[in-house]
Amino acid sequence: MTRTTESPTNRFAFAVLLLILLGAAAVRLINLGVPSLWVDEVNHVYAGQSLMNGEEPRFPSGNLNERALLYSWMVAISFKLFGMNEFAARLPSVAFGLLAIVVVFFFARSLFNTRIALLSAFLLAFSHNAIGWSRTSRMYTLFQLLFLLGVWLFWRGFERRQDVAEASAWYRILDVDLRWIVASLGVFALSFHVHQLTALFAPSLWAYSAVLFVIAGVQRGWGEAVRLRYGFVSLGAVLLGLLALTLLGLKEFLEYAIHFRPAWARYNLVTDTHYYFWFLAKSSNFPIAALFLIGALQTVTRLDKHAFFALCNFAVPAFMLSFVFSYRVHNYIFHVYPFYVMLAAYALDNLFEAEYGILKEKLRGAVFRLSDRWLRWLAYAIIVGWLPLTVWFRYALKLPYVVPTGMNGAVDHLNWRAAVDWLRENGAADGVIVSTLPLTIHYYLGHVEYNLNMANLDETLDWRNGEARVDYYSGVPAITSVEELKAVIQKHEVGYIVVDIYRFERDRYVPQTIARYIDEHLQRVWEDPYKTVRIYRWQRTPSDK
Image (cartoon, rainbow, N blue to C red; front, side):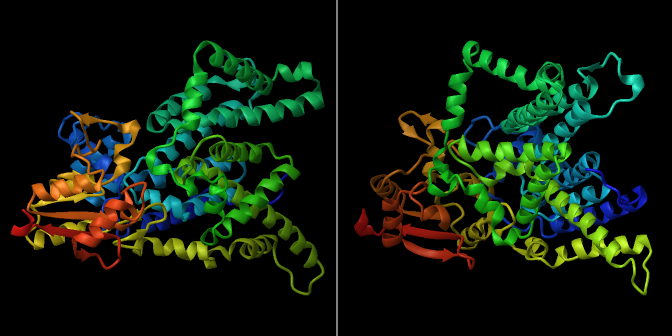
């Protein structure tokens, strides 16, 4: 497709990008340290604390805590600079989230034009899950940044137009610039260290190459198509895949990966193959989903290779996670979400070009005449100017103020700090503590004695202390039955059970026989105003002994 209208100048584009980054920074930094730590944030906090002290990263249980170690190092550096607190723990995510917006801008500009680049940056800056993960001490913004950078570098090597002088250069094979490919592989290695879903770029690239190989075969003949980079990648990948399956034992690993499902993911929502449709198409995301669909259709009707590359990088992982793997959660498509917003921006820009042409034709014989520049701005205002009025944008502006509890755009925060404050204020801080999230209580209180969360006893995390099963993270014994709970109560005269209501009411976390016994036989002494965390108390009387 040939684009005839002008793009903004570099100076103007960078000024707009700076404004977008300032807005993005605001919705990511305001009230950043107010919510209590989310369940998985505590992992990086403990790892960062260990690294900051020059120690090996371990959980209080003694088990290694090496997941996404590169991110934990960033948390450690932030702790050294700003102290050990929630704000400092989350600050690396803010930085990586902002850098991802910059990379999206340059990547989209190389794929399309500056207008689409600015729209893509704007859509990512105010996407709810991008804001949420940027406000969470978890590795997903780093993963998104590295994956996006790796794909961009690969694109530059795989599809960059060559100069005549470069045609026979040593670094060009099959019309591919190996310098960029090697650089991309280095970034992909870092990305894979952060999250193994990096590997899904391989089927995305295969799908892109296979389609273009077929088109080249039909148009230019199969003999010539095989000699193109698309034929080399699509056919070579099939051969390598067959060899890996037969000679390297990859089949067993793939079967394990496809059927793997942790204990916390054993419920209907995350096994629904429509999960990503419901997530992306919910009303608060209007109109992004509609624009993406339009952009995907335009990709096909316009036979736009660049847009097709973006489509493959989002659609293939989303398809595989929906229909191949056993469970799906929204953070598993976060690294490819920038391609989703690129296609939404692509749709808006195509609408702009169409409406600009219509306006120009309609106003040709009008009494008043607008210059081409003002006519272009008028068309752009009509097509893009309504976005700040949408529920999607207005909800994005509210996310920093959903504190101290509630959905931040990616995760739900619970009021753990208030619960621990109550324990301290009521002289219970040194008492026996049972919790559904013992690692979180351990962080805020300094100790915890028993685990009530069965998901922490997942067979993939199985860790034993003699015959007793213990929490993988905190190392404390687990209470798995009413009889075991009664034994704990008999052993300790006074104790407190601190539960988050979400897990307490779900059998996959807390057996409901235990939950009912606690609710019927123990005293409910505190519940936070937002109904996220609750405290029960037991105290044996002399007649109970």
